[in-house]
Amino acid sequence: MTTLRIAVPNKGSLSLPSEQLLSAAGYRVHRGNRELMIDDTRNDVRFFFLRPRDIALYVGSGTLDAGITGRDLLIDADTGAEEVLPLGYSASTFRFAARPGVMADVRDLDGRRVATSYPGLVAKHLAEHGVTANLVRLDGAVETSVQLGIADAVADVVETGTSLRNSGLEVFGEPILRSEAVLIHAPREALDEEALTAIDRVHRRLKGVLIARQYVMIDYDCPVAIQEAACALTPGIEAPTVSPLAREGWVAVRSLVLRDRAPFVMDELWEVGARAILVTPLESSRI
Image (tube, rainbow, N blue to C red; front, side, top):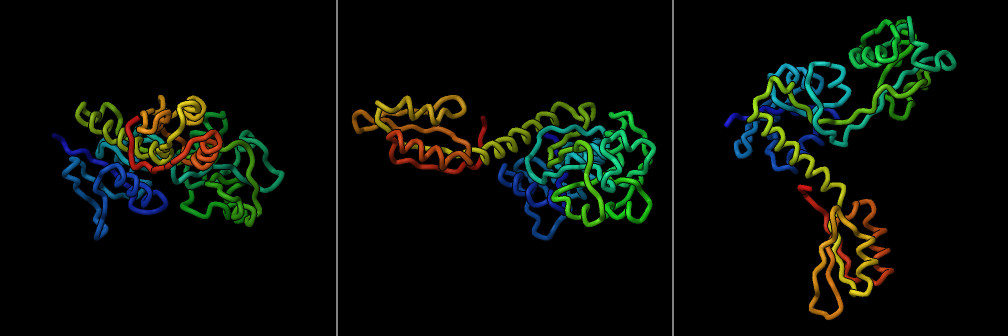
């Protein structure tokens, strides 16, 4: 069996959540001495800990089979690596910004200078809108570029917008991109069937953890007379599991409910007559 090669971010906001997700999915990724490579022999996987910005390059070239990086970094690199699964953490939004009242739409950037740390991503977005601009690549602190006179606008991650406002800028137009951590794999032509099968297994495991984080298991007892009403509150993914109790006229019900809805569902179940209501967190799933 060929060992699957997976890249993991070694620092930044992507690093710890990625290691936690992989660990929850049953992989050995703990780095006691901050190793650059770890062999998980039980799962036949070798993990490489790399700079987040480099991961799409290694995976896109087929040097590594799969990896976790940001959607923004994947698009900016444009290496042919493919997004497999959004992972739901390290979210960010990319926006254009300029001096107040100067620009209102992406078309206003035609012929202008735009400073950014993501020239590939921004160039693709501008091309999609038929806009030609002069991109000024900076490694950081792009919001100061307008004030210093090397750009007319910037394209950057916007969270609260405070740093932009402090530099005398305001966002305009629609978001360029909404990014988050994603699982990626090499171009399909660079992968054999064995690697594709192994990547699909990783996909299922990670998805199982992500789904488990969204749901909790709810158990309760209720009289048969209110079973229909109670089950309507807890329909689950397919259907609740209903079992007879030793107590005549009562049943035990088990179902999945969305984690953030669980307290409200418990209130509603109590009001219709359910009792012994228990909520249990999930670690993983296959749904």
